[in-house]
Length: 288
Image (tube, rainbow, N blue to C red; front, side, top):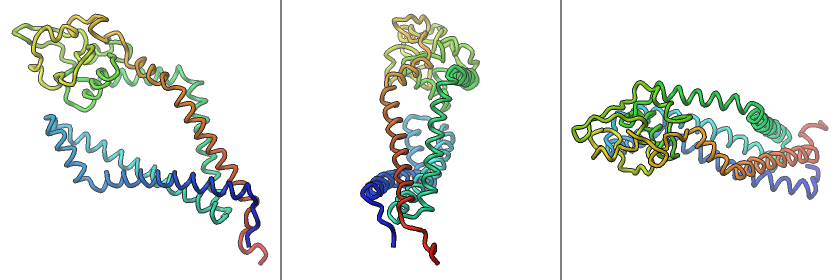
């Protein structure tokens, strides 16, 4: 028979079971979502095709399907890992199985150590990784950006970022000037105009903004914010890196709180698992 684990042990069992059931269901949901994306490709591709057909961007279908397939594989791997780890914790706690609880504790400690290391390295090498991220962002804009009428997935993503985060370029609009694919000259109202900053960097850009056909620019006045940008009509001096950093810092307290809560939960799970290991039943066959 198993040894009595006491009130603390029973509390630990309850906590481990509840926590791991929740994470197990989360892992299962991620697994199912990934499996649907991966093995129901016809269904997903149909929705993607219909969506792209509606906005007249069918040529992006291959790119998006490839991205979806990659995301599906990641979801499946993460879902399987989270589900199995949760089952180890849940079954180990219920049955007082030391091998399951020990394996569970080791993996959770590794995850906890990785999280702590990531936080320490993030602050210790902040300038280095920020410089690397900035450099990579500038390289993507220089090599892949095709301007306001770019219909590839990267150009559309960059334009969406300019519009959503009220920014332009990485540091400012000059980063975009390095992109050879950016078409700056248009003929509007029989006049030739040259953009100094992308139209998507203009302030108050609406959802009706032209994306594909430059002919959709209705008048020269409509593009004044791009041909003659000022702080009043354009975000051309606001870099997207600083804009994203401001958004992160705005919710910094929430991120820190969630991170600390998650790490404390992991610590308590390990403590309870170790306690049950020490106070739980002896392995079968010990006295044989």
